[in-house]
Amino acid sequence: MGQEQSGGHRISQEAPLPPGQRLQRGWPVTHYGPVPKFKPDRWEFRVFGATSDADKHCWNHEEFTTLPFSTVVADVHCVTKFSMLGAEWGGVHAKTVLDLAPPAPSVTHVMVWAEYGYSANLRLADFAGDRTIFATHRDGELLTAEHGFPLRLIVPHLYAWKGPKWVRGVEYMTADRRGFWEERGYHNLADPWAEQRYSYQEEPGEGPEL
Figure 1 (cartoon, one colour):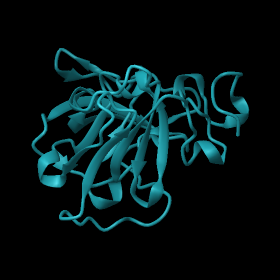
Figure 2 (figure 1 turned 180 degrees about the horizontal axis):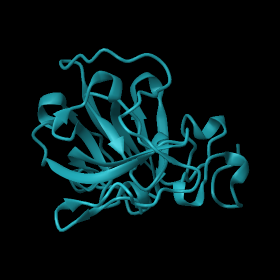
Figure 3 (figure 1 turned 180 degrees about the vertical axis):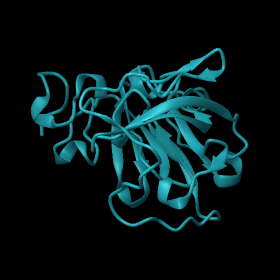
Figure 4 (figure 1 turned 120 degrees about the vertical axis):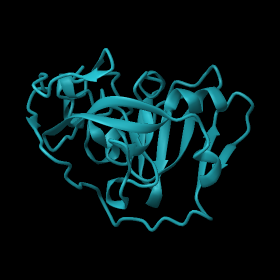
């Protein structure tokens, strides 16, 4: 889907776009609510809910920055109909978090939590995707506060609202539950290639009842 690495190089930005999308030059700032002030001494990343050991796992900011660093080249498709292709995202793979804090066998979904109580639900398989990454950098530079510093989730095969800015933790769930935008009329699955933008488009079984 979209733009991927090929032999360590980026594919041309003439790669096909999902339906209804337009190519964006540059990186617009889009978010709901104010930009939070980062306080490193109070920042904590938590994994909780249905963990395999029934315990909560936490990393402070210094500890999180020592986790294995990876990069992926991935697109961003915003539901407002712009697509940004071929950015290099650096940070911690979601798979690394799953390895360090394994979910219980009954887990089917996750809720990614961010500042101010913002949330986005994902199927476990989407969260565990090879290119799902908790990004700290874009194109080799630290994210700005407006773009999600110190941590944002990138889920390149879904619409960008599934990847919150200012992430603070992950909740493992044994049943699906809608997140912030999903409760407000956005599609529960959010596949841009199927143009799953709004909840009225959902087929039976694609999301919890509103």
